[in-house]
Image: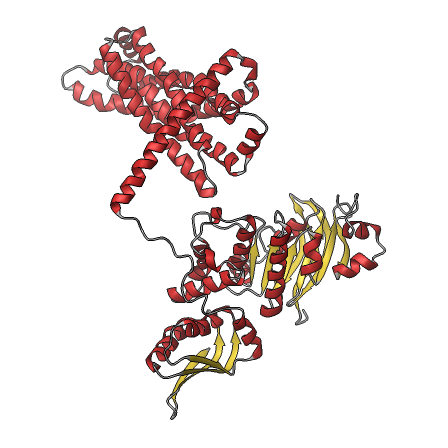
Length: 254
Length: 370
């Protein structure tokens, strides 16, 4: 795998119970880029992401994270690979019985031998990165959806992973909060060199936050477009791709 | 690997030269050492020379931020930090990180805690009374307009509450009958009175243990399930959706559950009574008392009043368990742990209320000479 390629997906058939909803998926994610996985509802975006983070194995194929194949990896290897990335789930998935600070501290407490005050400072710094330094003592239920998502990013970043997977980061957010989240993602990518893989169908975020995207089609069960989303929008000849990027009815997987 | 070299210069400054990788793996060793070196230098100025730092991630930056945010009388200066790492450092404002901006509130004094607990208890009691009223009104409405009840839900819940509970009720009741028979037969045998074990089993199962044990099992099983199910609906805003659709959550969710519990609990109680007596009979065969003799003795010892005394309780217990389970579910706040709390509270409140009401029944029966 070339040095600048951090994730390589090869001939992946993704689905459940042996039924493929995506067939023969191939793409690469470059180190430090913000990469989007797009598609309509039910198009297999989240399923593919679950395959990539090792939650569910694909039906067949290989997914290399920094040269290590996550498919079929034994438990120890899987844990080693999973340390390289953080995941923010759609709802933030914060632990409801812990404060924000405790949520972010948790991975540091489990996986490092840092002194307590160092863990505390690092956790607060991660929360500062996402603009939540004044909410360390709040419980997740006391926060808005956008704040929970940002806290989810802070927790995912606690161990300084080289890759961050974000599942629908802007869904359910107002435009201003979504824009602020997009800006946070860009800032973290440019300043920290973190590679982002974002699963989304929010076109507003796609054009602002991502460098490259793939577009999945539910009917074709394949990638029907790959590249810079702005160029795809303006230059594609494929009517399905055009329809998706121009929000026309009967778009991809609709 | 990472290392720290300390040099005191002739012009009175202390230079802390950091080298190697600054990350979560190397930091535990460096953290206290670097802080101590900076603290000991006071009031002299401290220069952190980062020229030898090859790698620095978020944890490494934390060490530099830690030095900057501490009120060092001589001041701390970061020198020769590579631009790639300087960009990371720029993300943070040491002044903001000086103190936790949202510390956890201090614990309240004990007197205040007692006051809050008493107020919470009072509020809970009021909610319970209001809920009883609302549930009673909903049940009266259901009796007047049976078509308003979602009978499909009632039968589904009947299956969960009744049929699915048969194995556990059978197991507990048969063991209860066997243990009760064995424990009482051993001392009574010394007086040649083991036949009266049948009287004991019959009376205790019909009047007390049958209804009470069934209700306690129901509280642990169905009461908790009601609280968790309705609690999850509350968390998922399904209850809010019902309200905004103009449907009363009590009428829609609570009524079918109470009806199902009232239909099933007496039947489960009968089943428990029977299985408990069978358990006792089986045990007594080992004390040379045949099953037929045991059953005849029970027949002579208990009458319809004894049976009804327990049977009537089962209706009241059913309303209590289902009502409390539903009430705790509807009181669920936000978050996954809230659902767990509701289920726990449903079981605890349910069992407490069962025992209290059973005691009241005992007093009433005594006064009525039943």
